[in-house]
Amino acid sequence: MSSPAYCRPLAYDALRRELPLLSTRRGLVRAACAVASHEAGESEAALALKSLDAMVEAVRSRTPSESPDALLAHMHDVMFDLLEFGGNKDDYYNPSNSYLPVVLATRRGIPITLAIVYKYVAAELGLTVHGVNSPGHFLVAVETEEAHQRSLMFVDPFYGGTLLSLPEAFDRIAQTTGTHIEPDPQLLAPASHRTWIARLLMNLTAIFARAGREKDLYAMQELLDLVEQEHVV
Image (tube, rainbow, N blue to C red; front, top):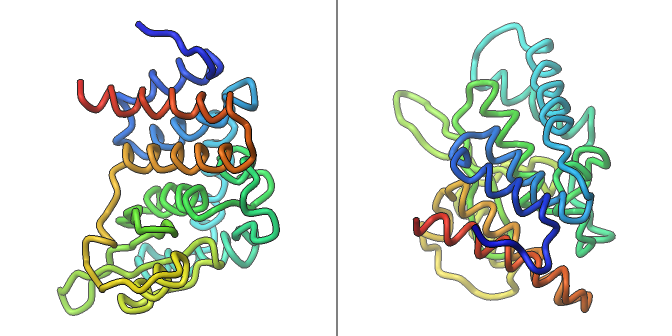
């Protein structure tokens, strides 16, 4: 068993423990909290899950039916109107935006961490939700059904839960990356939880490189190597 040279052992070991459980939504949350514990010095997974479960109960208390449309509408009311979760546009490159416990406390984050909040709450309510590993801007897709036809509705938690049609989702990618893109469905393919955590770590690697924080950059690379090695095994 290897030991990290730069990452806090607590964070490294916490992420290693969560990798076998990463396919579950609670495993995704705990893995994201493990990443945050490199800087926090302790894992706050239990507190994060308690906060997320409170959001789930708040939505349920407002929803008289189990209708997916009603659940989704009330979830948006709670997450975006009542609690005012949204993107930290003023300080986008602050590493704290990538740390799920901080995002839950401040209600500000970047697309990928806000997507974790959205995914957990929606899935606990019984909705089928996917992370979307789109270039430049992580999105969420909710499965919907109308006239026995299943389709995906794209949601942007960074911009207050904006609902996006398929063409609008491609436009959002083009706006974020500043490049022309062809509307390839692969750009909006669902992300596995492992891919989700890997992208979170790659984002942090870029943020620390931008800030000249080399030791933290190497720490994120160690965590990323752990995720990729475990996947190979």
